[in-house]
Amino acid sequence: MPKIMQCRLEDLVLETPVQEMPALSERLGVRILVKREDLQPVFSFKLRGAYAKLKSLTPDERRRGIICASAGNHAQGVAMAANHMGIDA
Image (cartoon, rainbow, N blue to C red; front, side):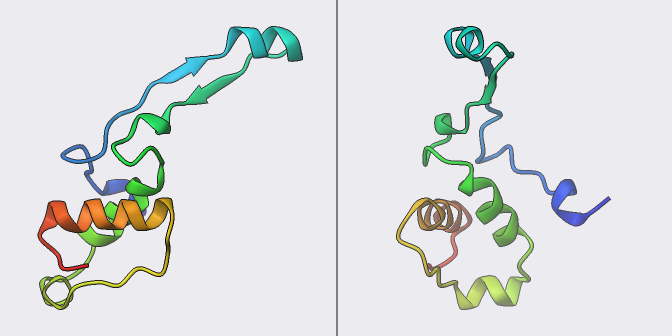
């Protein structure tokens, strides 16, 4: 199993529900389900990947801190994960 799939994230990342969209399903004639990642603390799925990556860093890498080249959802995910882990970002 790939390492990313073994990474435990539940201490920061929420398990978000899958929600049926009845009006849209009826309009399109197919069942529409959405994964509610907008319910994450940073309103995006980007927190998952950022946190998983930071958890994979060695202690030395964590001590050196991280830099993120983003001004959007990814940056918010990195900032929240880094803060949670005590990593300078």
